[in-house]
Image (cartoon, rainbow, N blue to C red; front, side, top):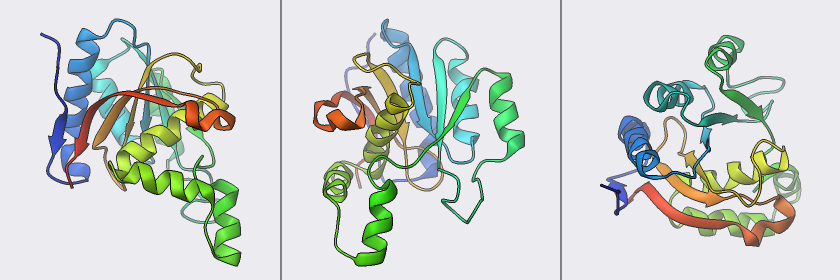
Length: 190
């Protein structure tokens, strides 16, 4: 029977990764047109867990932090993990955050805020993971990893693990306000 409800978690965080992945699997079981899943996983562990449940039914793309996010010239994901992901067919994308990127460098130096900060904070009113899901879909579309105009599942969270998933139609950054969230599969209540 099709899942006709949103899965809600008590709070944000890693505690819900396994449940979120099961909710995504349930949605895939009743969705014939989903061909790709984006997952924000800085270490790659959540992407590997997702693959362990859904296998190669769909293309899985792991989106991690850009180089230097945690420290100069540092990657948050190990070469060994990238190789493990590649062995099962998962691509890993490194890219600047669509809602901060270079604009964050300007606000860090001069203060104030960027209009993209307003977009990000508005999406965080749902959850940090919903914001991340939207952001990675734009990043992947701009990188040519997912086509615009095609519904995908995007998964995000905050810090470690994932706690939010949506069915979304990605757009390129230049068309930010054409982005469509069709369904929320799961998200934290608080």
